[in-house]
Image 1 (cartoon, rainbow, N blue to C red):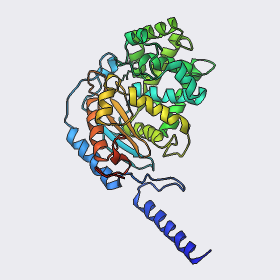
Image 2: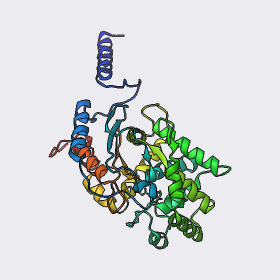
Image 3: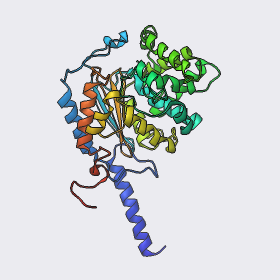
Length: 357
Ligand code: DON
């Protein structure tokens, strides 16, 4: 080895040691830090600012069409950022397990893509925004695909029906285990949420029968609704949810376990659905203001993905008219703006405002 090569090698080793020293969680060999990732202190400060700024915001109201959700303490509030190099920044009610609700739809769609390939999922479900409420019957009737996309209730129930298994229990366990791998921790059903929702889900059963009329459901309709209801009742805390998002941000590799759980080629498809339909009829405004693929749930969670950088998850039970947590939208918008996460902004890939190259 020449003197020059030896020097270059020393410099590389010195940089590697310095980077590991600065980050809380040491990087695994070969794990990359995005060159435009925000610094640790900056992320910490921004999360704190957002938490303080929106802590006493009382806009919106809890979902009440699922009785359990109506009685969740609306003051609960948690924020977490998990980066692709497995650093975690969190504040507030970070241990509280809330139901994942519609955020589950993203990960069942990912599992369906793992099993069938993205093309088949696209053919059988589609990927068009409905511009309607998440549980719209009219969208099923009016849209040529009937299913719309995997994130509205009809499309999500049809997506759940694509998951293979000998029986309902096997399908459900496969879904739950897959969520656990994406979160990097075992997850569990919140039984009270499931019971509350199963007793009041006539609307979803009606959607499933309508899909059967159009041949757009691929297993027994009511069995599929029941598995879907269970997947919506899975409990997550805000850190687990942020890590699920960070797995997508990290090209399908869980940043905590290092396990590849989602195929890289599926990640852009998943993010495209989230961008178009993740906040339902609020998705256009969200793309305008925040510019990040995201998904909301009526349990009060939202997770937003900054590809290559990390994910922001916020939990606050009060929702707007479209069924999206008000606090979560405000906090994510604030954090994303301060950290230059907006995908459509040149600053997100390192260009300064007004720069020509
Ligand atoms: O099927 C439902 O209505 C609920 N389990 C999920 C809806 C939901 O989370 C919509 N999201 N904002």
